[in-house]
Image: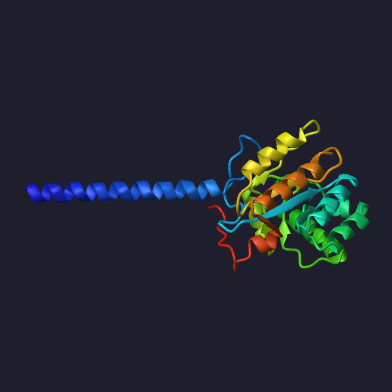
Length: 252
């Protein structure tokens, strides 16, 4: 009787320890896969937001849908610091600002699609979304960049149905793990320090390249210089998610 009670108690403790270890592992994995759209939003199901990797690499991404001044300054910073980034461009913007769109490709940055139009994918039927993707791919192809691999929805939000449609068409829908929260009155030093303390290995960082956010190029420069001092390298999204270097696990 004594041995039976001891054996049962031992088994209970083993099960408890295993449950605790699984809980800790699960929490660490989910913490690594967080989509920071704002202070309160949590990670969406199925979104690719970063690379699960300890290698000191970071991917900078820029959403481009309007403006023609700040993006030039951003490109200058990237050129001066010898960093290649991924630009998610809107198709209609690329038609209006063809020379700027071509410059992004000429300077060997990676290009993704931020929709052809700026209509919310979540509000559209499947055939309209597919047509928008096809129109956007044509624009990207005409810029001299191919193949189109990465897509972000114009609304900057995750929706299961949209993700399914995009991936069915052969694209990867990429979000981000760190959002550069910059506003018209943001202080360069404050935002830079916050970003530098937040960004870590495997992160995909989102900046908005638009003319009302004049501080973006200076903040970008501060972030690049500081993270380089810390030993980080900046790579394209494709390089960050390369299966040869990174194990990528989408949320489920």
